[in-house]
Structure formats: structure tokens, C-alpha cells
Length: 69
Image (cartoon, rainbow, N blue to C red; front, side):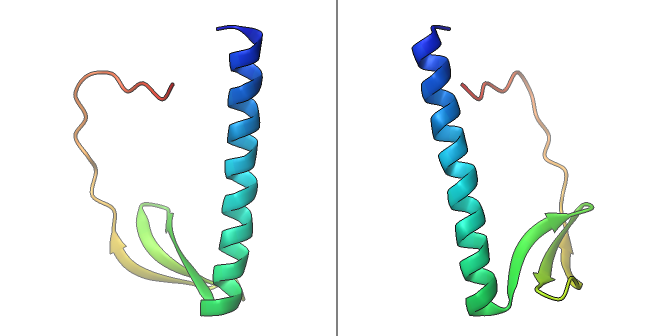
């Protein structure tokens, strides 16, 4: 992987992480909770730190390799 590709990938990943945090904060203010996966469950995470379980996450069967690049 070239240096330019590596730097471009890092810049994109950093922007995604920052954007995700911003959106999660806005959603928390607007709705009062975020829906996330926590300890194998889909849960509502409230601003006061409480979790409300919605349903368990089913394990996905995966065959082969997974490429994220």
C-alpha cells in the first residue's frame, strides 16, 4: 500500500469516527437515547447511562474471508 493510500484511508476513517460521534450526540439530544449493540444485545442507551434491552443479536454465520479494504 502506498503512503498516499495509507494517509487517505486514515483521513477518511478519522472523519467517519468524528462524524459518528457528532451524529450520536445530536441523536441523544433529540431522541434522548441511541440504539446500539451492547454485550450481545440491541439496546437503547439513554443519556443517564441506563440500557434498555430490545432483543439479542443473532450470530451471523460467515463463510470465507472478509476484506475491509
